[in-house]
Amino acid sequence: MRALVIGGTGFIGRFVVDQLLRLGHEVAIVHRGSHPHDLPVVTQITAKRDRLADAAPQLRAFAPEAVVDMILSSGRQAEMLLDIFRGHAERIVAISSMDVYRACGVLHGTEPGPLEPLPLTEASPVRTRLQTYPPAQVAMLQQVFGWLDDEYDKIPVERAILRDSHSRGTVLRLPMVYGPGDPLRRFYPVVKRIVDGRRVLLFSESMAQWRATKGYVEDVARAIAIVATSSLSSGQIFNVGEPDTLTELEWAERIAGAMDWKGEFVIRPDDQVPPHLRAPGNAAQHWIADTRRIREQFGLAECCSRDVAVSRTTAWERDTPPQGFNPHQFDYEAEDAALNA
Image (tube, rainbow, N blue to C red; front, side):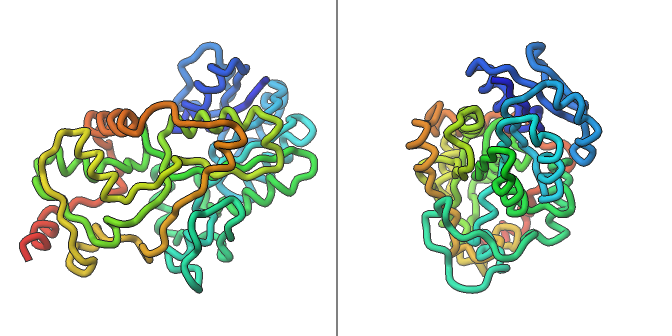
């Protein structure tokens, strides 16, 4: 099959391309030109996300049977994508996020009412309020993801892709993805504190117990590649992620174990820890997803053990400190004051 991947040089996209090639598919990638893919067997098309229509002739010339868009940010972008490939591609696969669920709004305080029942299935309610992230947080994310626009929201993306009668759309809702190259540096707060010689790591009670489905980048990419090239996926939504969900403290313990750290974790009530260590909202609302649909329908399982995935990610975080912008805060003076209070 000919598969075209938009955003094929990004954190997850590179692994998706590799998985598609391993499965024997012919692959083209679309990127901005700043980070070309290093595989000569891949067709490369240079285009900007917000001016994708300018490259329509090249995109259509590849004659893709499946288009995988890793970086759809808004309903407007989704409509542009459909206009380009309507009648030229059999299947459009939109990479979405679990932040579409109402549970995300409950966590951030934008959705009224009770906690959302768990686990979150593909049929669980989505948010009633669009653009759940405030402008300041969107601006922060744009420093990490250059493709993200001011209208960021995956709900309009999903609606546009699934309701189009001319393209057989598929939506994949991704979890919190970790692995070498993670631009959000999910393991870095623990790794840096250990590298800096901290012997005690402080957690708030709510953050220590919070659970959110995660996925190792190679496993997530394999799921995307398999689903994207299967006719069985048309018109469906799939949650992607690991089958079980650890607490944030359990993740930290595994990272510490991979670094052979012998220090101590200390948990304190939320009002006794610095603000940068507190949960970002109502941590009673967990993000635990049910991933049985994709596993049962496609026979998916993890490529490697969690210990191996954590070890690889931890080693990369340790050896590759962030350059420039870093989304995490480190205030050891405030943390020591809280520990000594």
